[in-house]
Amino acid sequence: MKEPAARFFLTRRAALDLRSIHAHSRREWGNEVANRYVADLYAVMQDAAENPEVGRLRWHRSAPFLMVPAQRHFVIYDLIPQGIAALTVQHQVRDIEALIAELTPAFFAEIERLSRKS
Image (cartoon, rainbow, N blue to C red; front, side, top):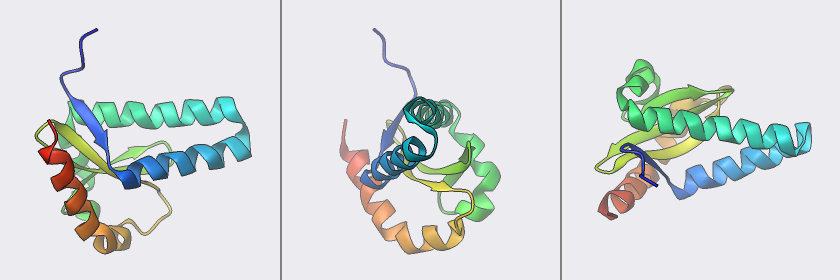
C-alpha cells in the first residue's frame, strides 16, 4: 500500500490532547461517537498536510504557527520537511493566543525533534 504524499506527525502534546478528547467524548456520548469524532480530527490533520496553507487563514490568532478548525477544536500545526507537525488540538473556547504564547518554546523543541526524523 502506497503512503500518502503528504503526511502529518503528532507531537507528544497533540497525542495526549487526542487521548483526552477521546476519553471525554467516550464518557459523554459513548465509544462510537468518540471514535467518529477523533477520526474526523485525524481527517482534518490529513487535509491540512495535503494543503498546509489553509492554516494561514487564522494566522492572526496562531502565529507563528498555523491553525485549522476541526469540529469543535482547532489543530495548531507547523510545517516540517516531511509534512506537518500537529502541535496541539484545543477546544475552540480556549484562549488560543495565550496557550500558544505559553507553549511556543516546547512546540519549537518538538518541531526540531520531528524535523530530524526521516
